[in-house]
Length: 81
Image 1 (cartoon, helix red, strand yellow):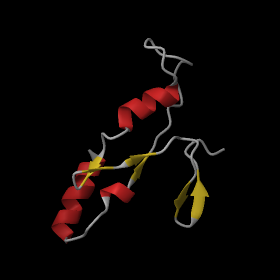
Image 2 (image 1 turned 90 degrees about the horizontal axis):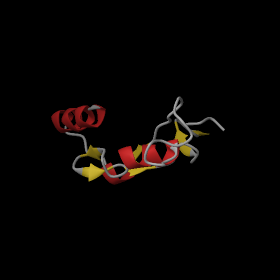
Image 3 (image 1 turned 180 degrees about the vertical axis):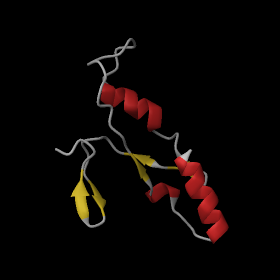
Image 4 (image 1 turned 45 degrees about the vertical axis):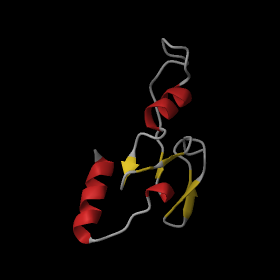
């Protein structure tokens, strides 16, 4: 829903956002070590997000919670390790 809002706002404002340079990640904090399908939380998250978040009809790149990414000049990870 938030990616759709971003797309709608950028269309309204005349902004161009590169969906291919947009990244999506997350963190599943409270979950079993494996779910009923035998997937780890990281695999479950990847299945839920990879190629499913669209910005300007381009899939945002999925990065794992432990992958570092730059944010406001600081390199962070979602799991903060």
